[in-house]
Amino acid sequence: TSLVQKGVVRIKYVRMDSLQAGYDFAKYLTRKFEADNAVRENKVRQSEAYFNSKMKKYEQDVYQLTQGERAAREEELGKLQQQLMAESQELQNLAAMQNQTMSIQLEDSLVSFFKTFATDVNADLILSTNMMGSNILYINPALDVTNQALKGLNERYKKYKPSDDIEVDKKDKDK
Image (tube, rainbow, N blue to C red; front, top):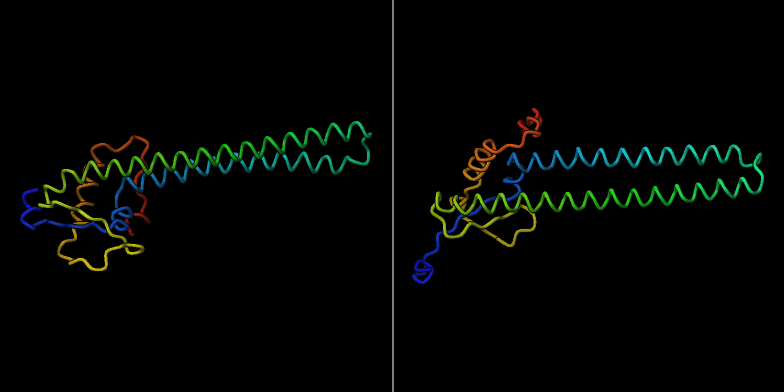
């Protein structure tokens, strides 16, 4: 506050798009979400395939069935369709909850890191900017601490890396 009162505020910034693209924890969360989402999508596809096979079987058999048998099969198909829609909605909700949880984890990680990092780079304020949608029209590039932050974040992440984190593949390393 004394620096603010004197009109001196030490400001630095990070390019958030670069930070998220280069932060191993953010990459891990993205890979985990994509893998979990693939499992969810596979479950829905399997359920859809089962429903479609039942529907096809019904369409093949429809003219050989009595009125009562048709009604029973149609009721069964209706229940299967409702079950499929409910399962699909539940999986979408799970994906949204996982995405929200991961966003919170990433934000907590960044906030925790930058509390200490601000001291390391002698900053009172660290802004984040993005190539798209930033309210900041100009920042002196000398104030950019993105690369230092990335190095520190990734070093810290290596110490506490989850056991289920697969190694970054060559494509990620080349980016």
